[in-house]
Image 1 (cartoon, rainbow, N blue to C red):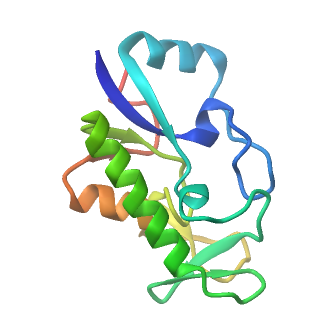
Image 2: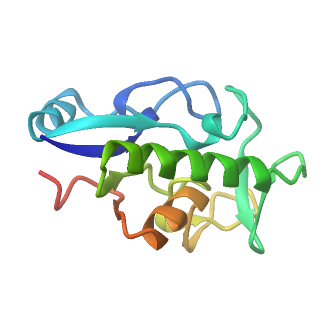
Length: 143
């Protein structure tokens, strides 16, 4: 069975910045599990950030928390660890949480903490794509 790297929050793990999750509907998770072995990762936790944590957004090539702290290094460490796990498990595809500063694919928040979206990629999504792992922000094309 093919393995699919997946944002852990999408599987129901409480690893989101606010301590919650972004769980996919049970029927969607069941459909994914019927086709893939899921390999959950949270790049932000893998990079050493706590849960809950202050929200962060990408700004000018960096990742900055709402409190003004530069957390870019933690996001990079987490991205590298997610890539290592993907390679170790032979994942060729990833389903990642949209809009996230680590997992966003195609759109992310603009760095103003105003809720405004802009084109771009999260740190982990960007690295996975660079390393030829196909990144999805939704289930279309996966099931």
